[in-house]
Length: 251
Image: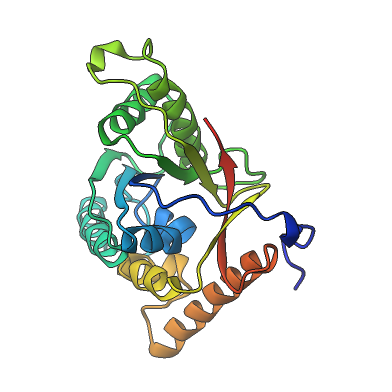
């Protein structure tokens, strides 16, 4: 299999960002941040970063089980997210905006919500979906990514949403996971296992997004190895054994 990042040049890999005092992830669904940045979050948390996680939708459509109701699934996914955050060492805020899953549309209300939480938490780094990614299938991922980018811009400039009564805040960096053109990598060697533990907390999702990892030990092992191969592929582009890749933006 050809690497997605075969043209990257390890010799120009940027230095790692300093461990931020606070970081905020903005994911469309429970488990999105774990897939995109779980190892990075675990590494930073272990070094003293206060990690907060904002989940935009209620995740109530993410199942193939016709016997599970939307309200039941939403409650399950809330509990799973709490468990996953604990595995990552995320000790900051866990925010659920509870927009309907699969129906997320970009709006000024959504931008305002994101701006508000950036100003409240005051993260040095914001992490989210890359809204510029070509062929991104899920509409919620696109909408959440745009809201994250535009929410950062709003949070940094005081004339946006003054009615919030919160001081402006400008993060030092934005990291976009599943990036169309990655140019920044975080070493995953020591935190791959923590990423997997957090992902597997989302047991309601193992059938539809984790190749049946909850069905048997062999299925779980297959999923873990698939994710390990993914991490190795990402790291190869930057001369690392395992990595998560991002697009780095300085706002």
